[in-house]
Length: 161
Image (cartoon, rainbow, N blue to C red; front, side, top):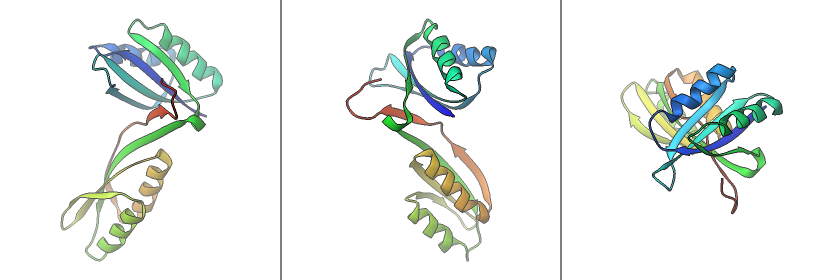
């Protein structure tokens, strides 16, 4: 089972290294990690996607809470969050495939951000499942490169994490 964990930390050098070191020492695997400054430039939000049972998620949360630079840790309920990822996909194509690929991108609500005679680059921001579907649909057209961010998430409604 995948668990989404939101961690507010002090925005200073070395914090991410200490947190990733914690995961390495404990043998926890990170499926996705995204970091960015919040509405307060002195605080960053780290969003982690961790694969494991509830015990693993609880241990990760406890270990993170022990870190000096950590302000707040919260395991987010999958049903109560808004999640997004960003992906760039470069596809090698022939001129007769161009229309088919453009149709897929339009249907998936992606955006073409670069085009040449032999490649087309697509950008899409959406739920991870929809990103997976876009990649699956473009795979037959010879994907050359994929760059994918980690999952970012916020609690739905008025709750603040």
